[in-house]
Length: 491
Image (cartoon, rainbow, N blue to C red):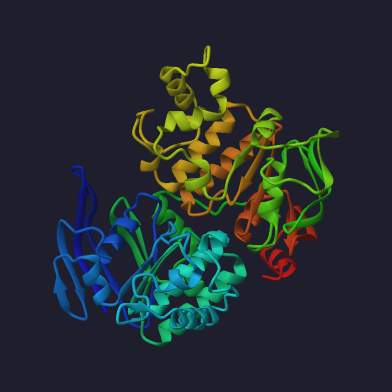
């Protein structure tokens, strides 16, 4: 249905795609893998008409195009769901689903038809959301599903999914996979971009791996091993990350929640975080894991129970008090809540330490640059050797490393990570795991809130499973398995 031949693309004189071929066949799912910066997004944006190729050919149903506009791509039945949300937050769910094609007669919008269309598509996705709800009131995962509903409503013949499950729980991901299966049976061609290697066999027919703008592996999904895929992506042999045994027993209790509650988010949650360990809060979206993590950083007030630091009561009125108490945060949405996108990598890394690095209220750019240099190699940040480079020009995984560097520079004792590897490639994910493991070896403690069961299995010493705002299970060490996590979470 879709064929790309010898696609080349350069930006600023640097070629990022070196003659890539790709075929998307009717009734089939092609899984597209590659580390951040491998060229995946550039390639599919060419398919969607956002970029024009410098050379090569695009053909749909045998009709050749040198390049085309987004309107031409849509007319050919190509739909793309981007990794970063592209909705209109102030508008309702129904309006977002029909964005660009509101039902109308004589220039007058039929809101009844708009809502009816939204209800039909939401029911098909099994999403329980009121069509009149503003998109801004939804969770990140719900907003992603609304974008998927919009693409499905456009009767896509070629559907490109760019990290669609990154913001979804296990249950929501399964619902999406079931929908993709139905679309495949109808004859749609689907390109599925992901960093989750377990999805290759779960959803794919074929798998294609890009590295540095070239295809380095093309295979049947059922035949490709995890080791082959990882090696192809990173360019070296790299086994799966496994949870190492703790070098020493956990140390003193650094932070604890005791029967803590926050209205409408979680209830009667107790947990202890000790020096030298990683504790994971696992649950699907809406379970309350992210809310508990936010409370540990002062972003959400407690209306019951208490928070203690080394056994002493700790009242957090906001992030300022949390940072002063030696607590750092990586938020779930690094684009909107973590990174200062127009600022440099050096400014972003140094931000929590400005009070210490500055003199008489002034911040020296050279001091920031030296702070960045201290962690650039340690964190294996892939960027230009330029502390002034805007953080927004880095890949998602490298942005996450810069934000993690904030707390290393500040020597923060306790880290709270919310969905720390969402949208992060396998190489960067391993780097982040290794860095955090190094921190726990130094006696620091890490609290991870995540909906990614694979992350918990690979990363945690202890895991608390949450459902509907309550802790429903606690697993330790080797008892942390995919089956036990998903069974307990009801995912």
